[in-house]
Image (cartoon, rainbow, N blue to C red; front, side, top):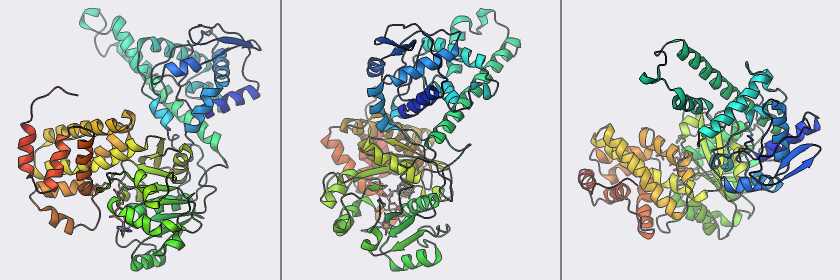
Length: 584
Ligand SMILES: NC(=O)c1ccc[n+]([C@@H]2O[C@H](COP(=O)([O-])OP(=O)(O)OC[C@H]3O[C@@H](n4cnc5c(N)ncnc54)[C@H](O)[C@@H]3O)[C@@H](O)[C@H]2O)c1
Ligand SMILES: O=P(O)(O)OC[C@H](O)CO
């Protein structure tokens, strides 16, 4: 059966198809149409399938064949797929806009990465459209090193692999990996269904030759799956090698608003990606400017990490903004509107602003993507947000990190990928700006709750229950406002919640720990030199919860504790006394 993963990058597939066709590799033999999805036509003896109907009706689910191919001739399968892709133009063009570009760059000099680097970052397209099969084996073939060249996967093995995938499709209704169906899982369940190693099945005991054979087969599947992924990454990188539309290539200056820890980290990520890029930080303190420009050190926020020479600082907004092609906004949320209003006249209408600030403005309940155009007095100003689990110090230390860039304009989200992604920083893209922003803002409030539990010494069970409940509350509100569930389960949601709730580097969590240990909020804030966005955002969350009629017991308790209307101990007692309910 033919299967097409709808999330598979259409651009990649089209290039692949064209490449194979041009190279004359696609055999022109007929295959039979299963006739279930759309019509058939015939050109040069090759069956063509219109997959538009299929695409429209199987979003997120496992899609089953549009046609039947001769399994004994795997090469036909390749041709079949290729032609299918070529004749699904509308879908492909639409998908293309959301497709991800891989632009991993060499960490120091900005040259495009060659073999052996990270896999391509995903697009919304990829993230959302799980559940069908990527024909990665075929991608490998197109990349110039066909299935025969990886591992022990000979042409014949590739054929049987396709067959196995087919049979697995019938057995499983889920597929989780970008590489397609988890064959091992599917086959295992199939095996158990048919002749599982149960006591009554008469199978040899564990550890016998049968089990060892199964283990070795499993191991082959794992190896094949991994190698397929690696080849996919290589193919993708080759495809985009020398891509002149790369935002990094055509950018010469970027300004960064805010010289705190994350503004500095963002400036360094950009500067490391391209040595000739002029990265200018707009900061308020002349001493900090002197330190950055003379000693390449942000002595206040990042004293142990020397900055690349192409990072400089200024207190002059005009100097920072003039000629900049992008602006990164890293000013705390509650100060952002006033800051942006003060420089609005200097900001060209075309200057995209990428916000990394996580929170809601208390006075308006706005997210940053709403606040920025309003503060600039320009509806429709180009905005993206970058979020996800990321401590600035770990980025500076080149620890592997994953973020998500969200924008209504997919090109801008891709530009964020191209400018910032590196060997240690993967950036997905999405159009779900609201989901990314709500998750990023609300996780800070939840992290305060987690800190309180830690500070009170309530134990691991309590911590896990609290964070799970908090996740549900974030989901209830964000989804009601229009966020996508996949976003909330992704890097900016679950990912950032885990990081911020469980890791002591978090400033929000630290505030909670100190509250839970009995300190007063005013004393805690007075002792901090950096922002903990959750403190202000908590009130806004509760106002939004009321507006959207969502009950949020944990986050409401945090807001009341921060307002000094409830002690942490009383809050726990009250929460534990709430009615026992059905899980939703
Ligand atoms: N630090 C991190 O690991 C991290 C990671 C992801 C996102 N963020 C988000 O990035 C934003 C900034 O965080 P940070 O860690 O850099 O904070 P920070 O406290 O380290 O720095 C804040 C910066 O904003 C500047 N600033 C404050 N008020 C200002 C004003 N009125 N006008 C102009 N500049 C002003 C400060 O001088 C400082 O340079 C926050 O919303 C935070 O949630 C931080
Ligand atoms: O230190 P925090 O609590 O502001 O968290 C920093 C980042 O948001 C973590 O992703």
